[in-house]
Amino acid sequence: MSMDLIHYGIGRWLHILFGMVWVGMLYYFNFVQVEALKRAAAETPPTGAGIVRHVAPLALAYFRYASIATVLMGFYLLGDRAGDVLTFRERAYVPIGIGAWLGLIMFFNVWVLIWPNQKKVLGLVSAGEDEKGRARRVAFLASRVNTMLSIPMLFFMVASGGIFRRAMFA
Amino acid sequence: MKHPLDSLWGTVIAGLILTALLYFLARKMMGM
Image (cartoon, rainbow over all chains, first blue to last red):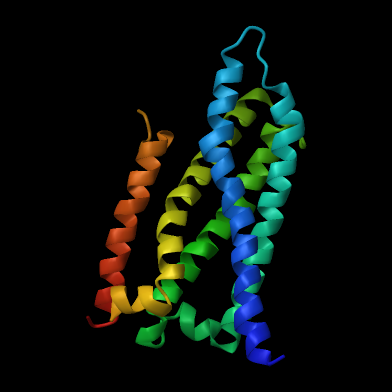
């Protein structure tokens, strides 16, 4: 088995696999859980406790660890060209460089804005009601920003090679 | 005031607009 097959074949497969888990969970939060919790909160008595207690922590765990695996596999794929790609040193690196930057901003949002604030919302760290309210808003908006960024991120990932690249950037 | 990202449609539309802007920026950066 050649090193290229492991690096670019299996490496890309795993990068996409972990990325699907990450963005899949992100879409679950944004498209499903936010709306489900809103409906559950409107019932009397509120019925969302099970989601907050059992579903959200598990989904968040897959979400944040998949983000690490995705970014690590991304850097593995870029190899020693990572610096050149992220600084757009060659014109050919522009599409994948933009995709990589969008992914890195999303990764930052996961670990700096979403997860620390979700810990307060879920009661995993102590926080007053006011602080919880602020944390909920920051985590929600960061999550929405990531959903927004995932759209161009995916475009630049798939448009950085093959027939799509030739169509978009030839 | 409601934030555009409060709405799912607002989020998706913002993502599509950003994709178009970045696409033209990428082409410019590539000298196309």
